[in-house]
Length: 440
Image 1: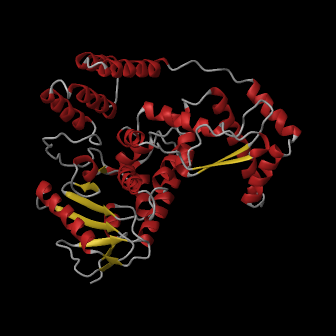
Image 2: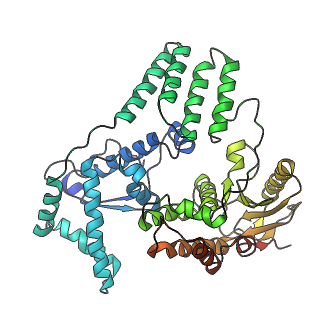
Image 3: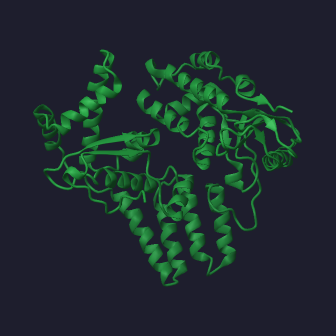
């Protein structure tokens, strides 16, 4: 019911369009693609196309007009990130730039004491009331737009994917795999993408040679652990400590942003998904990304290996943080059920089986702190409730805000360490400050 493909809202049928949060794939296959290839150019281009389709639902002719409000940190990130933005048409890119420019006008009004909502409504009214100054500004900017050339690299990838699939349809499995192998050989793909195409090759070969197919699937899972686990299983690889000092790892993560604005968009994209009641897969992914942003190595064992906890952070040599996420639980529930403590016990047993007798802090993200009837833990477990989670989110946001006035390309490790201390985000703080012991 929320799909907008084919929906036309011309003229007065729609003068204000609100798109709230980034659109998700509707089919199981689309969602699987987004899960396995979150950093793929293919997914970035698809996201850009879906957002552009949404923007176009309300403007169906040359004389039509509409104010579009984009809301939600994940949508803002998709709009603003360089990885996705390059795939928008030149017209859409210019319209987004115009939106950012007029937003600056609203900020000026807010600084002068205007209520934020009133400032927003004032901007929208200029468009809806057909303000002549606004129309001239818009026409001037849009008249300078030049069409962009097609992305030849992406066209080549799509062309080869199609050719391979057509060969597979006529049961020419060897040729289908050869096409993808040639594509892998001629392009510099990330490990994530390489794994995806190895899995596609395994899919083609399965009807022809199950032995070779299984070998390819094992190689695919090694490159991208979000893919299907090989039928014969895989050996769990231990999560190792980040090779850099923690402050250097944080600096490296920050330097992936060209400026402070982009940095905060990435941070908000993580923090927005850390809430009770939200999508569990996004929540668990956000926990992993938060660990990486804070300078740790992090993974999702249950998703990557098919067993183990939802999240695992390596804090220091032979010191880990094991995290089970129950963010979908009713926020008013106070007792931990037998099945939930059992899941935590299984995760702890998995850790001991694969990591041995080393230091680990076990945290259950759960709204309540009491053990229910029949429940119990085999190892010490602490609980991160809504209050502790909000405190962590607030301190993380304030920590990254400190980078507003510094050169992101030349960060001082001593300053980073001082800010970690100020915002209680040192390793010792993370172990002690953001969870409480389970009540008996």
